[in-house]
Image 1: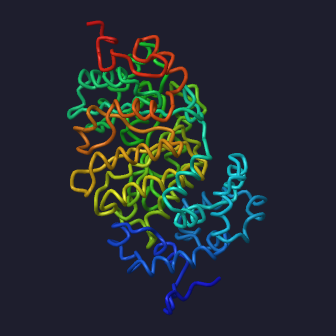
Image 2: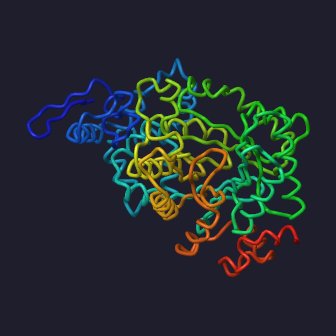
Length: 455
């Protein structure tokens, strides 16, 4: 295993695989904050060259967090299928990149090979790809999952309806739900980020979502994105939910900082199977985001892309219905500007898809970042071209509760029309019956809440 190279007459030597991974990463403010980033572009290129010549086995045998100290590492390593791994363990990371991007590598081939990859390998090959490489590579892969409806079919582009409210007023939430539905949003999920993480508040919102879904006969899923333990208590008290949600990290320490353990997720999955309202089999919803481990000092000296890849290695054990990266929410400390946010969104989507996950993206930014709405719309189009399963939709692109900007309700309709994409089939048929869509396009009634209220 060679950890040094000469570039422009200068020798660049790295102390470990972990350092190579960090310094081969594209420029990220989070890595700079942690003191892990390449000092300059020359060192970054040198690290990429070293990384390209490392073997799949080198990255597998040197996880960034020790196997004996971290259950995320153990779950990821133990999930590798030996027969697949042994076929590719002597490939270099550069050879793996070339194979993934070769037009002869089919979707079935990639899904088979991915069973032999660990998170560090997936992060490594991602660092050798351009943005277009990430789009092309991800576009080959579709991951289908089923809760009440099936997400991820080729030719579809779905949305999560996010009707957040500043005080969790159920009537205000209901109005936002109706508005989102009137723009064709919500086929992946109707899901609220609550202000009040209390069992009573969560139960009240879940009950209202269930009433709307059943009264209007909407073919979709619903949940409230409270802490997983709060959701569990609400369901134990009789609240209806199709999915359980939890933010996850790429290390055991990071997950503990989020207030849960692997045993918590296993208990939640069992509870949903017994008392949830969805047919399944996919009933979990996970969110991630580059930099979350650093924010809780749970990154173990590893870069944020590698830690993000480890989130996906963790998530796949639980066969989630949806996963999304909240790509710009943490702020400029981790992703400084539009260049970094767009790169991170494409990285995360590719890594999740290569891991075998139904990836979506919250194409978002905060107002103290060097980014704007045009940048986020650019990312949305790039991800849709890459085969992203779904995006988020909020009123006028402004989430008044989380105080960040993401996609507006009408954005998905524009993207679908431009790229010839559609909502989930059952949801599209429902929208046409309600007069919202006609031959895949919004009608003049888009934005008209009386479609659902009758007044």
